[in-house]
Image (tube, rainbow, N blue to C red):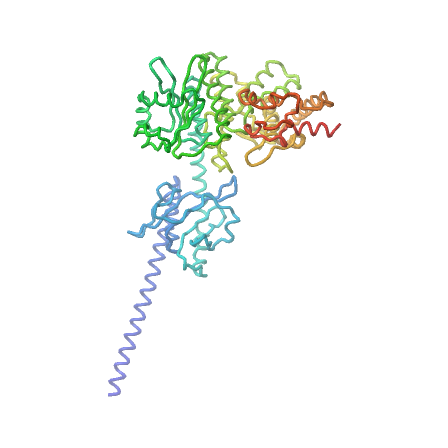
Length: 612
């Protein structure tokens, strides 16, 4: 009997050992299979990153790899932007509950409608304390891993109970180390894509040159520019003809809506009657008159329209700008809009007088440059200031008159390339991304192409093309240095440097006049040509010495700032010329981004008086 019991024990022991062996084999097999799957996933990631790199497929593979380490509902992928030192959001994936797969979000940046957490578009290095860690964002926990090398970051939206244990942290660090070369590959692909986009942008900008100089082209440009400036969704221009109004320009509407609006004579007549003799009128969804709006405009999202009466020569028209949200416009905004819209009247009037001759092309280009200046209150008068200072320098250097004239033209048109590029980038508030910066840098080459194509002056074109080159070779677009840079481009660089210093921006005040002079002197020999700087400083010193004992500004403020007469004629300063401009109340300086205490007209006077 005992032997029988021991026999059963032996059998059970053998069975237990066999069971343990089976479990052990199963575990080994599971981990081998898991390792094999992970190995295959790594191979797919590396293969997708080979030339040509499939960026979306590579990022998708990285997210699937991460999902094996941490279960998450959303995954955000960031790359380091070398320009501003921030991690910029490149892609978002979310978990598909039906099959547990990861799907790319609809726009790459817009989260799925059921997703609660919105990934920040940019993160600073200070926001990420460690290589691996967890952030608590309100009611959301975010696990993150910074890829080795510090050029990429992955964020994962995890459950509220998630804790980063040692094993998980070690696994993520291992992934981080293995993906370093993949990230470098992605960065190189991103650079190539950016270059391709920049080339495409440049080609499109060059193609727009021909249409730009036609009257209709400038009207479209003007309406488009001011639409962006006042944050409207779209704009249009109705010109009054013998048989009623004709739609000459429209932006922001779909093609179908544009066609219906073009032939809607009843709506044209209503808009004309609603505006009446007023200069500016507002019509929004809360007004009883809004009920007449046709269904095709309602479907487009129109909820408010600003109407502005335009008079030029013997012609009358209506400029309109529409919004998808109604809002109240205060008295100050009304005045600003009237001043801004008056520019459109100037444009419409001048374009009707222009022909297609070379001389008129120059005037057309100058008109476009002025339009670009007026896009922002901080750049009003820029082209004229450039022309003034560049001419002063060139004459002081005793250059031939023909060359002085070319420099003056190039200075006035130095920003013409902006008109053919993206207004969104030009008007952007805050820091530029690396791509934004590259687009803005194109303006010198595009501007040179415009001048060369329409005006035929290759020397003036080269001055514009190279005016952002530096003496030390660190400029753009070609990294020219020293004597390789044309003298005209060197003069433009000095003028632009000084104007940038004495002009305010939305993120900083202007430097004082003497601070700007000191800055330009310190940049001589590295960024700027020393001989040109010396001539500029000598020229300025001569002018200030001539007015050494004058108890006032060097000239009237409207002459020094080159602000439009439409603005200055309404300013109290021009009425009371017996006072210094900064002693007058209720000035309109804010309309060109300025305030008296930091205005270069006032700080120049202060500096001159302090030296007496």
